[in-house]
Image (cartoon, rainbow, N blue to C red; front, side):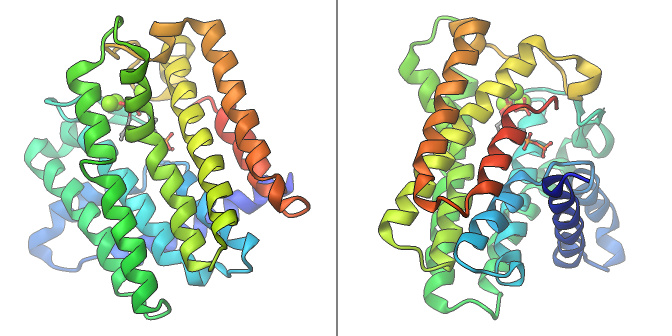
Amino acid sequence: MDPMLSYVLENTEFIDRKLQEYMSNGNPLLKVLQESINYTLFSGGKRIRPLFCFIVGELFGLRRDKLVSLACALEMIHTASLIMDDLPHMDNAMTRRGKPANHVIYGQDVAALASIGLLTRAYEVVLNDPGLSGEKKSRVVCKLANVVGIDGMVGGQFVDLKFSNKAMDHATLDYIHTHKTAVLFAASGTTTAIIGDATEVEAQALEVYANNIGFAFQIADDLLDALGNTDEVGKPLKRDSGNFVMLHGVEKSKQVLQEHSNRAREAIQLFQGRNDKLIALGHMLLRRKS
Ligand code: IPE
Ligand code: IPE
Ligand code: MG
Ligand code: MG
Ligand code: MG
């Protein structure tokens, strides 16, 4: 098997196991809430952000045990954002990963609580990690809260909902891509760099890499929206009110995606000789079909 593929499979299994541990709650009163959380948390997510975290960690000689609370927190935040994104008053999407969206099965009330439950558990698992110093925990959680909140994903989703249309200006589109998607990618790198005691220069290089990959990742998502096959992509397509492809067209979008991908690659030259997995991850993300 391709070594990158076996790396991904092995680590995905590990992440799934740990997510079960961190999220499980035996209270019978909460059974349906737990089912709603598990429904989206274990429905075939690619686990890109935790994998990115582990791969960056290797650059600093960090074993995955040292990073697992952060890796799972990133996936919890991401899953929470997907449940919320699909809600009727947001994107009103009925499917996710080829299955009915969370609210379609559990109702909007339970889905909203599942999303907030995942989000808050993310901070809790990092703060409860006995393997991290108090100083690192507070820096990591502060960064996570910042990229989730008004300055990050919440702001990006707001601008997407309220201002995205086929005639929006480039600055608005740029804001949406950066804040709704790229910031969580970038934070996966920067928070790992905090735990790994990265130098300023290393942390900066990782941030440039992750911002560019994150931005390109959303262009890839918009290209899938325009060109993908609904069954393969697993979510409703051509429903965005405005996106990169609508503004720039397919060819230009592919070109800009490539430019961001090149910039990402250049940024990690610094880690030459040890950056193969980071490069492979970039390829995997930008060539995805779902
Ligand atoms: C989809 O993200 C939402 C965007 C930010 C574009 P992913 O493609 O990482 O979603 P899953 O978890 O693998 O389904
Ligand atoms: C997703 O953007 C961004 C977040 C979930 C934060 P989209 O609305 O484009 O994502 P999909 O296409 O529903 O996965
Ligand atoms: Mg959306
Ligand atoms: Mg959506
Ligand atoms: Mg989309």
